[in-house]
Figure 1 (tube, rainbow, N blue to C red):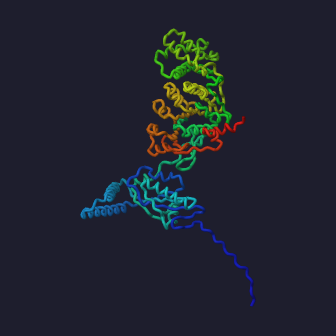
Figure 2 (spheres, rainbow, N blue to C red):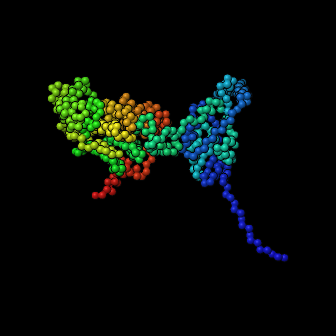
Length: 579
């Protein structure tokens, strides 16, 4: 006998299963999932009632299977259902049982549906709604399933797990068009049409050449990109209580607009944008400093029709804001007469060739008023004394010292006394508007007015801001109005008009005292009210016409260092600064 030594056969590799099936879940290549079938529905539904399921922030597959029922079959089933309900009701009445209100409601619905079928006003469908929840681990899957079932219960949906049918449930929610669970409910045409969500959690808008990242969508976890220059108008408004992150968001938007080639000008009451300006090579002007002045009497160097008349109109607005009240007819007449005399005394006439001469100052106007001989003009000159000879003359005591030219211009008003901040805001807006409206240098521009309530408190200042909001689009500019005092902005017709002329409206956390006015002005739902009342810093609502999206502002570490106003962070910067 010959014995042959054979090499032992190598064990064949056993392929790992692609899907591991368990009674309550499936393992899918590093993740787990489980399926739910909806077996209970509300009696009445509204349009898009399934939208909350589609906007669930986690990974959730939603599958709706629809199969039409032939009219003859539907009519026969309705007749049998009506007969069954009526017989049950009669049996209960004969035996003295209490009425079954659910059966009575079902009978009413069946009668109404049978009437619609008979008239040809609707059809019957069998529909099955199934959900598959995904998670990285079993522990996380239990949490996600609980959240999904809670969300379904809030919609009056009874979602049951597909125990021992997990594989069939998973394949049912795949885009294969096969219903392996076949847990269905009869729908009529109206109910089925309402089941299709016609809204999206993401903004559906045109993105042009200047898109800006605002943050992360709180509903779909996608990015919220928005281009104000692709909208009907380029204006925006940001309303929030103090500490909600409105200035932080405004700085992020300004910085990201600079990336896209937009020129930015900022009216900064608290000197919060200075670090940002220095970091990107911009210009920061501090009004109230001894060497920084803006002369409101300056005329354009280029010929413009009626430029002198329009400058006189602006001076009316400026004097009204200085005095803190609107002027009566006699005071306006005296002021208008003095303005034209002051320009003539400086050799300036409606002839554009004279506009290159040195313009007058506010003290020259006060002198003209005092020499007018009219009692009203004299009284007006006396009221201007603090701004020409007194403690508030620093802003007007001299000619314009600077004409900034940069991609980012910040006008800081922190050095101004509180009595002059509204006037400073108005004068810087006027300076910015001259630059924006210059036809020789057309380019997209963003004008940020932080703490706009300082100007909105005055009627004439509010009018100027409203006119700028109306005309900004014509000059390829967007006006961004930021305020923590919603009452001042929404409490007047002009303030409401400024908001109405903003295609982009951003609401961050609101105070309980202001939420009613905010909800009425922006037509907020109860859910949106609660969102804004409990929003964390940087969380809010972006509205654009009929589109609304909840979002969370996000920033890189470098952007955060430039935009934050945290006292602790700023103190650390001062400690690290070289001596």
